[in-house]
Image 1 (tube, rainbow, N blue to C red):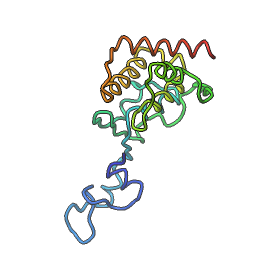
Image 2 (image 1 turned 90 degrees about the vertical axis):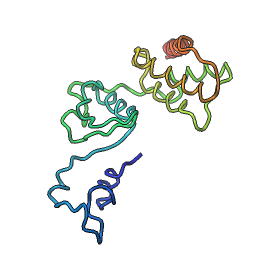
Image 3 (image 1 turned 180 degrees about the horizontal axis):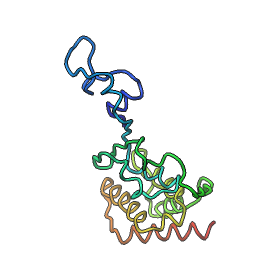
Length: 184
């Protein structure tokens, strides 16, 4: 979701309410030099920054200084900050992507399908499965990633009115990782 300052930066035109002068009005007038001093900011979901970090060999902790605001899962990021993962980390070798349809996310979807649970058009299931596949087995098996996947499963179960136990969710995620390792 773009915020007003993102639209303004991308379109290079004043957006009302962003502190810029509105044509025909004299309020909120700022000199050009003040407007140019604002750092470029983007607003995105936390997972987008995490994916960029993973892709370029950084940890989220290393790049947190570039995060200037957090509104739940929506984060505002200063892309000109020195810690922003602009380019791959020195010595980082990117992982070869697995073929589509292979990996822990695909295996988790198969397990859930056996219980009659399939993705709906409005759920985050397919996106999370694709993200798990992109992480690969090693990254997906970290406690933080397992907790992240279980949280999505819990939220989706609540939205569907299904019972859910975190322990069972973790078991399913670990089984999916195990299945993906055996099939690789």
